[in-house]
Length: 427
Ligand code: EPZ
Image (cartoon, rainbow, N blue to C red; front, top):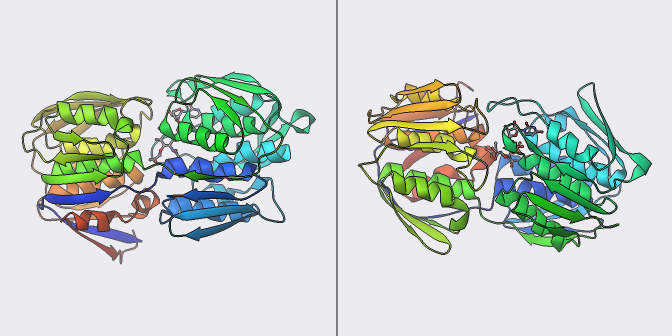
């Protein structure tokens, strides 16, 4: 496995271009399973491990995939399957996105249950509730979800999909895909409003499905008999954009984050401004100036348009620089705090009380060996490493490569000193 060696203390200057959205691409890649013809996607972050694993999974269940630059074409192969094995699914949780489309297309599906991961237990009960509302009989047996449409075709239904931690992005996505080939109308209430859900709705509409209400808690979908294919431009990655905004804020200097959609980053922009970070918001870019006198704040992650949980760890690294006490309450994944211990290894003073992190900012950070536990935790360690005195080695950056395209190259182009090297110890 590789590691990143960061020599901290350099300010960042210049422009960083945002890649296509990982979490926006994944549902659309899986939605191609619904189609009888080719699907062409532009702006896919093809150098991410999660995207490559998804393409491999699609191939193994009978699709043909072609990659050229950031364009991906997916075509149905000759022998399409309705099953995804543990070996395919265990590598990536989002693989459970194949449940809805496989069931809708074949009338039955057998998909391995995904496991938990470093950010928490992550149940899929709401995914199952969604397809059950469309008339599927569902059983979980021997680690597999076995789903079968009564009468061999799903039929529209009415379902409420919010759970104890709010709406579910993945459950909404799975249900939308299943409903696209069901007979009649499906209404999802308590739907996730995240831009990735809205993106999938636009793509399904492009493929001929009639959908209304995306971006609101009520989505209606009129299923069709056949989906022939379509084209789509994947929107920019709002979490990557947010991560580079925080990088600019933490490291000092002046950074332009280009090719992003500022409207999707409102909560983060508000938080950064409250912390005294200077920002200039353009139409498709945001400029950030590093600020040495940061103000501590009290905030919480929330479903969209609130602060994304996927930016919590990175924001925590910034809070370590604000003199005084900051609080982050994690409302989506109450256990998503694996980065605290590692940030503390760099000299941060953070403690956790239930789902709340209390950050006593202002301590100077000093370089150390740290271990990445999940994707966004890894990013927060890299950000902290940018301002830690001396050398920080972030091990297990496999996680980082799942969700950030060429992060070290992008940071180096801004003037950071970050080197990727093979980790001899293999940790
Ligand atoms: C998506 O995960 C993202 N993944 C996550 O990004 C992101 O953190 C999360 O949404 C929240 O925004 C992808 O888009 C591939 P949820 P998802 O279903 O869909 C609970 C990253 O770093 N829940 O919206 O799995 C769940 O436990 C990743 O890029 C149920 O109770 O998240 C959580 O508390 C990590 N039952 C809450 O709902 C269910 O059936 C929201 O989860 C499903 C979820």
